[in-house]
Image 1 (tube, helix red, strand yellow):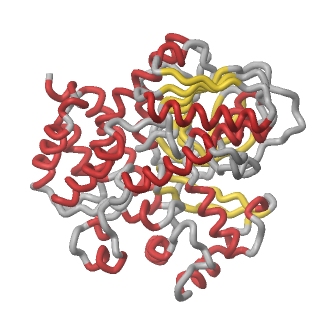
Image 2: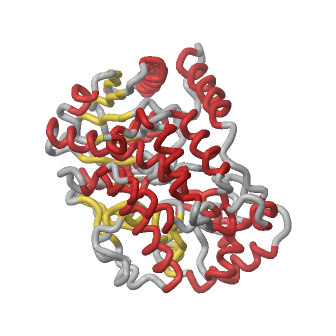
Image 3: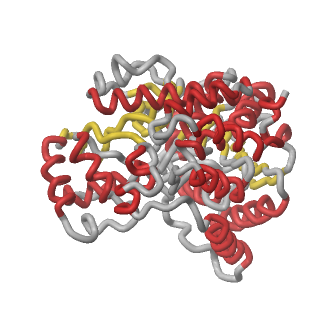
Length: 449
């Protein structure tokens, strides 16, 4: 959500750090901060292990700042400790192993008959990605507290639930949150069904990242959830496009709604990965969905890089400088600085807002009121049986995955996959885990001590 321009320049936060020169996130988040016009005098530091993306993203964001006419400094560095020294807010946007590992994660899962269209959240691909990234994320959080005890973390790195939980549990950084833009797509979809502008709608969703469920729909602050089932029923019966919506695809999510009574927020490709019916290679549902393992990532990254190169070095101005990204980092940061108690959908340690049955400290995605103290979940009462049971199971998977990554515990990695709702086979799980561990041995030293 856009933040107000009425307040003066922020004086009590000066250094913002991106961990990873992401072609997808960094420039868009910097643009949001520039659009607020409240960060004159601040420094945005980008850190990466590779000078190539670092230079491109640094050059592009410097050009954006110059075009905005604001007094904001952009720095690039290969030195993580230098970047974290004095940092006020840190945005992790990294991937251990990069795109090649991401594609390979999905290919190995497919070998064991599991289809992973996205491969960054759940299932075998999400598990091995977590095992590679958790130690790095924990190290970043611990270094941040050492170099800047006041520093805070707003996480973008997937698997969102596992990475955010690991940093929160294994560091002294206060009020860590994770952000995902999926809620924006769902809100826009539902706004079309309700025939209102998205700015007038608030979707109250709860669960875990990439499998939250719509609990309430508010329009101008008034509860209009009683209209939801009829509108979803009409959309589910429609042919072709759903509400003329092209950005996210909710056709199979609407089928989940028909059976479970609740709509998943994140759209078909993410939601299907949480259900064995939609991930089992060769199943009728996989054929009907047309689900395929992740592909095209490297080609897509090349196209994205070409766009950023054009924007960074073209003679014409950088385009789209007036557009908000939907990532919401700027609004969450301003809420923590201004203490406004504004509401945001965040990933956070459960503080009781989702009621009985969800363990204290479990990593959940929910609506929270954010102020200088950090996030506090907005109470929705006890979750209904279906989303509660699914969330409980996923919390257990997350817990075992964090512990496996931190301890280098093969048995816990196997147990986590056996509990994973996308895994239907039993016997192949130990063999699959061992193949992943051997494939990524250089990234997983704790498992080979």
